[in-house]
Figure 1 (spheres, rainbow, N blue to C red):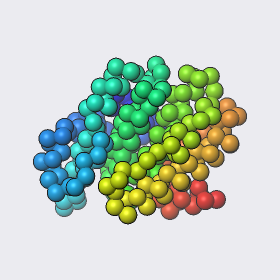
Figure 2: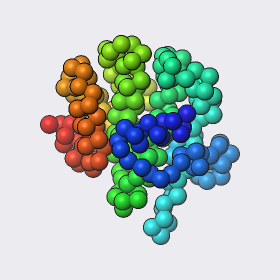
Figure 3: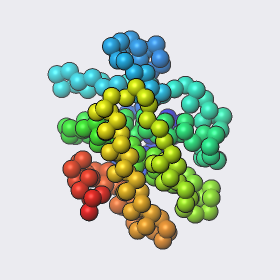
Length: 211
């Protein structure tokens, strides 16, 4: 599933990281060894280390989530039984792809930028999966993704503010995508918009959403 999500995102945005996310996946034991001082152990986590211009990445995704997706393929049916685990997986791969592609181009990335793009990626990926499954634009998708959520209780204030900012901006952008493109069946135009948005920096993205 990890490789399929990576191929889907890279195809969607017409980019190539020249990497295979599976080569960077670690289990819980390896994560603990790589980040022994990290206080949180979320079900998805991208570990990043920069040293003398070299970037090292490791991705942890809960094995139970991946097992559920293997048994309940979201490409066949995306529903309450696999949605949460699918979103978890898309978020991890989104972080990996976004950071890897920008690192190759010597472009800096903020934590907010990573979270915002991951929220957009989750929405768009679900939309593209559900569209043929439901026969149209799912009317409750934005609500399920951006309203029906709970933040982890052990987040610090900075993390909470960042996640809430990413959520609210992604929700606004998703509403625009639906109003301008999806509800009118303008899929090709929507993909062009998304590819442009993906290549912008955080300032440009926030300004575009605000406008």
